[in-house]
Amino acid sequence: MIRIRDLHKSFGKNHVLRGLNLDIEKGRITVIIGGSGSGKSVLLKHLIKLMEPDSGTIEFDGQVLGRMNSRELLNFRRQFGMLFQESALFDSMTVEENIAFPMREHTRWSKAEIRARVREKLDMVGLGEVEDRLPSELSGGMRKRVGLARAIAIDPQYILYDEPTTGLDPIMTRSINRLILDTNAKLGTTSIVISHDIKGALKMADRIIMLHYGDILAAGTPQEILESDNETIQSFIAYDVKGEL
Ligand SMILES: Nc1ncnc2c1ncn2[C@@H]1O[C@H](COP(=O)(O)OP(=O)(O)OP(=O)(O)O)[C@@H](O)[C@H]1O
Ligand SMILES: [Mg+2]
Image 1: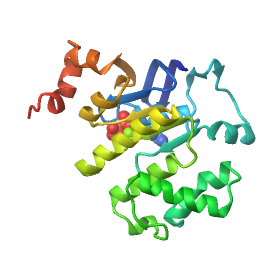
Image 2 (image 1 turned 90 degrees about the vertical axis):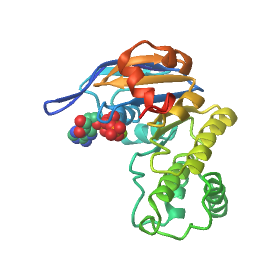
Image 3 (image 1 turned 180 degrees about the vertical axis):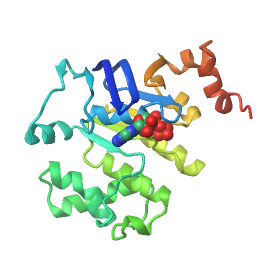
């Protein structure tokens, strides 16, 4: 279980996370929705210590995340795969080198094994023979999928997906949503997904969290979110759920 208590984070005068409390169950798919700028990406970055809170705590299985030296940090991060919103690929590395990066960093797999596993992950995200290309030679949707392949490279315990389907066509969106579901089902991965794809969220989430100005506005099963009488929630999901323009 991940327990987040009274988390605050400001950038200058911009108070982004405002005393956020949240429990995330392991082995489940939690989807975080919410308006642009509500703090979703900032929250995710706190979970892997890419950002430090001003105050408040994050616990993994009862252990409070505190200061870590570089070795402890490497061990801690080994448990995570993260797909960044902007893919964040290494520009000067090929697709293969990008996906192999966490394998080299965290495992002792041989070159041949790494090559085979890179191929397997590329297949899983529906990419053909792009191993030798540079990120700049790919489309935005292809880069996103390379980022996804890198996030799942070592079958981590936790996978954090920051908008995995934004910018993808409907067929690809469906197949990536399936991939998230399958990875969760097969490996028991704890999956935390930020998404603006409300329809997809309602279908795949065990729990949906709605963030609003750096705090939790609602948390519940897809059914509970659908049935919420909160106006902000209803207007947020109206376009996808009711097809209202
Ligand atoms: N490194 C940073 N330095 C300063 N301000 C930041 C930084 N990262 C995020 N912010 C600010 O924090 C707020 C929340 O940003 P965040 O990226 O978490 O939004 P979001 O909910 O992910 O939005 P979107 O749906 O558009 O991705 C924004 O006002 C943003 O400008
Ligand atoms: Mg974001």
